[in-house]
Image (tube, rainbow, N blue to C red; front, side, top):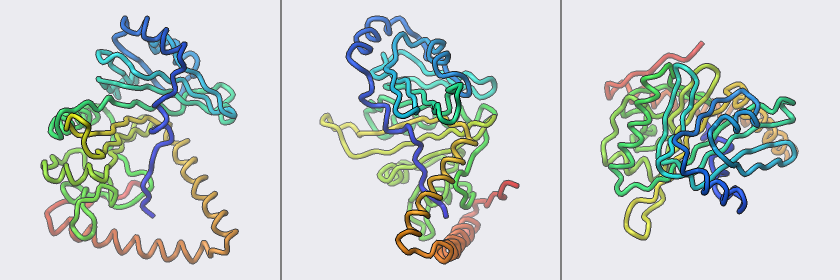
Length: 287
């Protein structure tokens, strides 16, 4: 089944800074120019080496986070892995995550960046997203398809089987230049671009929810980095947990899965046929 996937940290970045941390951060943060980070290393050391003068630290039953909000606008977040560097400006919040139950060394397994999303127009927001997509294309990153599903190029990658804009029918093609009209329709529902590189799964999550008081569009942008193996394991465990809950309620999981698979295969076939008719491509599945 082609599932809509939300990365765990995406909506947790807001409101995590304690008063003392905020005060110290605002006093020292103006001297920052970059927040540098990578995954797979001890979260305490990663936090120290990031350049952030003060984090709000939380430990909830072994699930650890280091977060900072209201980052000064000039500060740029930099994913530092060689060949995969990504620079993101106009940052609002930055959060590191680790799970002590999974790793006694409490290595960083995911990172979430929240953008200020202070765009004056939809065109400005789209331009920023395009600039972000360009960085991934310039690096060693490869387009990813977590959760499976068809792999389409061009406009077909943002359309459902009925030809309507729907960014979760498959995965948007980062090489496709979206028209302003399609952009507005796409952002109303939201979408996510995915990339894989050196064991890391990255996603750019974008949506809009109307207008702000000044009339400018109200956007939500998150850039997420996850250790891909852990991401996939977590996804599988979530599905397993859901299945156990449903089975306990009398649902025939095997029969449901057969039905869901048949329906998804039929949808995928229509998506692929429609893409070919438009002149777009169907990419091969990974081995």
